[in-house]
Length: 628
Image (cartoon, rainbow, N blue to C red; front, side, top):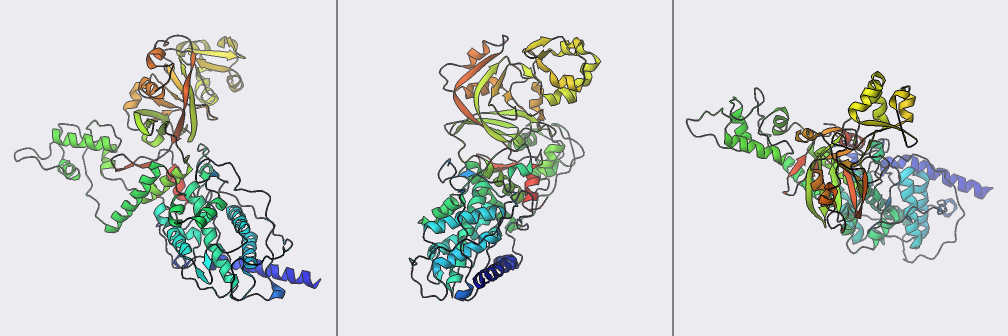
């Protein structure tokens, strides 16, 4: 009974210790209000944020043998690091970032201690036992993501005889110091070093307990950074149900082993970031934006115009427009308020560079971009870096890339862009989903099968008013169990319109045009032609019900069919006007429907687009950042 009481007393002390040390474990700069992102640190209470947990500190002196720390928890049989890997470094689908379950704490039987591999003259229990005790304290206090990481880290230590990975004698090794320094610079990755509860690099540990605690702090920091750098801090589905990506996170155990064994830990840590060019460009631009911000250069004077400015018009705001575009004043004798050809050309260039219709008209939208409508550029870059962490680490050498806020589609072949075109995407109420798929076939002369939401919300009232006329005017047919039905024989109500199929026959008036490009997915969206060509001339092109309409679809088809041994664009066009026909493509193409409001173009210029669905603002909120 006395032995049991001692163990219970010991466990109680550990639990009390872990209840109060979370605050102590935050590094010194957190206590002084240091915030490298200009925003508060991510907390586990923020919906969708990945949980990070500070380690409990070790006791300052060795614990008497009669009151030794509780033994290590039994290693769980479920190995979260054993999932199939997709690329090097090994990655796995992320665990949802909203885990909150608190694990039960048990006191397992003590395994006989092995002789330490590394001798130590420090006071306290043997080093392997001290490490086991520290891990037990972390596992007992951690929940959600932090608990999962702690379990994975425990397995790494167990596989190495529970010997220190980072401490030599009573101080950190050179590798440990390099690791801590790189993690402290995580702000450069768009992350927050406060999440890692980094210890001071100048360690002097007086006991084996302090050695174990210090060693485990670095290990947990590495594991946390690896998951955040590779898979992000926010769960995609917490931002929108239409974002159905599963980030490929580097498993915590694999990450720790990789850094611990690396010749250069800084290089290993950098490798956890996405390897994609888009992410690398944004990271470099983040550094530039911060450097420019430090210089505190004054913003240019805003351009003020009385009304939309068209070529040949005059306005008192024209001199300010010239100055904004770095254009010299006209020669003496020319009206300085005249919107002349030289200025029109400069405006058109500006419009083209900023994704606007290059029509030379300075309307409200062009004026807003000229005046740099106030945006939190730094925060926007960080939010877009987060979305890159949700993307596949390998986009493939051949793929289709749709950037929704940019209203553009690009076809990449062998890593090079071979086609670019405008697209129309989903309205705010019918958002185009964000995911990756694989294009497998095309459909020539497609039927348009009307989605249920459109049938109920948009078509039903008109059908009820004039069933026969409505279907005849729009080229629609009613089907039931694969058979055509006379629409006048149906009593049209919500149940009826849901039960039957409604489709639009192929032809010039068909909403899908002459061709659609299929990459089967649960959202039932695809890319397609359209008879509504005028919408491609708009700056903002969010008009569809979720599918992506492609400008110049046959040029797009030519890029998709590049290298196909059977199909060419002329062969497809020869089928126009006939029956619906499926065309399987020889080589499937990856399709990425993405959402980036900030990106760096091939010329190295930062491009910003409107947050049409509000995803960036939602991400910034989840990260506890400014909502500007």
